[in-house]
Amino acid sequence: MHKLLLTFLGFVIFSLNTYSQDKIEIKTFEEKTHYDSLEINTFYFIDETLFQSIQQNNEKEFKLAYIWEIWCKSCVKGYPLVLKLTNDYKSIDAFLIINDSREKYLKRVVKFFEKKGYPDVPLFILKNEQRSYDANYDKFVKTFFPQHNDHGLSLFMLFDKNNTPIYSTNATMEIYSSIDSVENRINHYKLEE
Image (cartoon, rainbow, N blue to C red; front, top):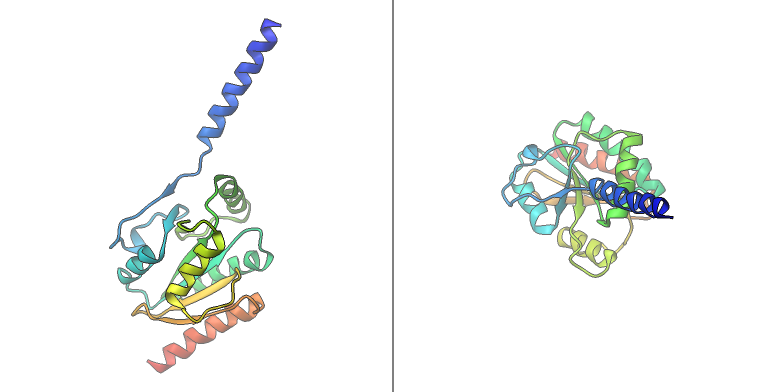
């Protein structure tokens, strides 16, 4: 009986140590941080103020924010399309933004990236200052697109070099239409200059 109890306690202590070692680290960055100074494949908390700050310290012609989740089928379809777009257009910095910062969910996100491959960009998680993830999402999106009333993931927000919001998709758009619309806006915008 004593041996069984010691074995059980050893298992519990091992499990607790293993869990604490697997904790996902989410970093923060200071205002006035430059996008290129952020580590790739690393999670960073972001909110409206930090997003605006990092945009201002970025000389790229376009900034593309993509709010998505790994459980959302259209979002997962859009993930490689965002990466392709940023590879095709070197004038774009991508902000891959996840809305759920719970540890259990982030472990699933890490497994997703281990399976699908990590992007060569920093990864962002919205700071959950509101009690509701929906309220947090809405606050972030409406800071840049006040008329945006369509709550949904797989959302693209495109900003120009002056950090002016120039386009956002909506949840009713099919993912391939969304990415085509973003690309059309970029090409149209370049022609206007």
